[in-house]
Image 1 (cartoon, rainbow, N blue to C red):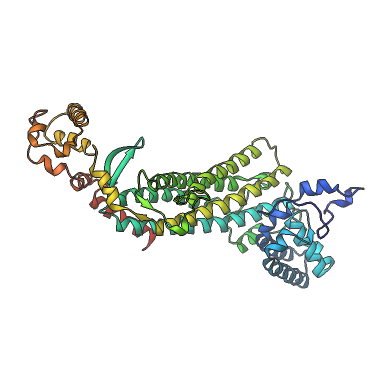
Image 2: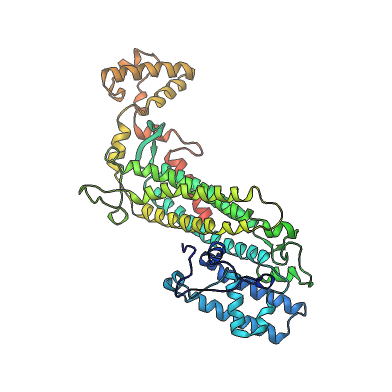
Length: 475
């Protein structure tokens, strides 16, 4: 993200819109400190959208002639095309640095169309102008975020369908607990993303109130039809209180909050796969082109992308904390502190969307080592709970069954012999309820298929979940 810049031989700082009130020009260091142009220029298409609608509203209110309206709109569209063509070099070394994107567009408009360009700001303030820009930006970026979540969910669904009959240990406390299907594990991430999708979708409902027309804080004096302007930009309502409108940043906090929870989910997922990619687990292998090596150790294949997702989660948390801290002490109404809302938001959008894209690539291309997973699930004591459940089906209270199987587990560990290899007679020394049908419970498939309720890991449950997901995703 471009940082605030000091004047150089190529850059020229323009005077502020409020210079008539002051006898002295702004101190150069003060100009550098206060400008937001080097990062809020990303809002230019939204600022121009809002300016065109405002121009049409001024004409409806009789404040512009038809000719003036056409002139302003033509000039605004030309500026939009110019800015859209700017290169990264142009952005890094701007010839002119304005106080913010709003003043940049207004200055360029006056340069293009003459003094009539100065009429554009009639009846509005940068306070309600930036409120609109942010809402338009958030509507667009929330839509893009939802599309990326959707794409990642589809990738998970595809991989899950192929792994219904792949078994691995499930863990609690990072200790092997019970066997599960790999598909079930993958669909757990899907459910996390589904809650994330719901949060972002819900936030769109709060982006339906049109803020322009609130003025600096008290509304406008020109009878501009706010509802007509709102309708032109696809808003269903207008904000109800001008004081609240210009200092409200709840929509930004909504995005940062939902983004923080989503990054937390991606970080947990990343941690799973970082462990699974280790030599100790060897449950999966990441593609070479989505991994890195070591500058010193030739044998290394590092899961850097997953580690960066895990690391960048803290960065997104920081953005949310920064904005909540920024807002907590602000009196009504607008304060310049609110300029500090944009860099955390823009950085979070880029970070989150980048993480979603990378996670989809990894999900599409990761190689699961199925034999290793299944061998791990067959070893050890993962079927202990199923043995206890077996005794329950024979009429024994679960707490007693738990105690008996605990004794069996202790003996198995003491003898270093998995109880799946025990003869029936040895089980019967612990309880006469053990019968020949016990062998059906002492298999991975048998244990997994018993978990056939809604949300379970059985093939039947997973297929039902996949069918439901396909209906939602329309695939």
